[in-house]
Structures are given as C-alpha cells and as structure tokens.
Length: 86
Image (cartoon, rainbow, N blue to C red; front, side, top):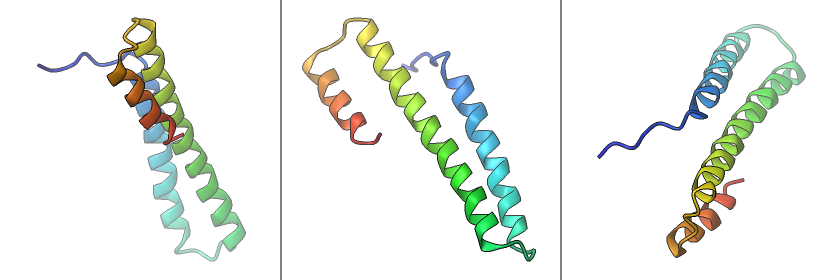
C-alpha cells in the first residue's frame, strides 16, 4: 500500500532542487579562477540549504505523527532516531 504524500514535501523538494542547481553552478565555477574563499562560501550556502530541508522534513514528520496521537513505542523510537539526524 502506497502512503499518501505529505503536503509539506513540495516546499522541501523545491528547496532541494534550488540547492541542486546552485551546486551545479558551483561545479562550473571550479573551472574558473574564482577564489577558494568564494567557492567555499557558495558551498556553505548549499550545505545550509540541505540542512534546512532535512530539518523541515524531520519536523514536519514529527508534527504529523504526534498530531495524530500516535505516540506508541515505535513512534517514540522513530523520534529518537530522527532527532539524532538534526
């Protein structure tokens, strides 16, 4: 049985696609003589975007699970596992 897609996934996908495009442009910049500082700064921005997407995904999932009162032992274990990824 296929699970229903969370409506909050669309902004996460959009954010990741934007980071993907940005990362692609950074790889093109590596062929130029941009300073390592500029490149590292751009890579840091991509890292931040990916981390923000991960946090949003985890927070949305936890809110969804806890919002329905599903705090069984399995759900609490899942929450502990997810919190380690933040």
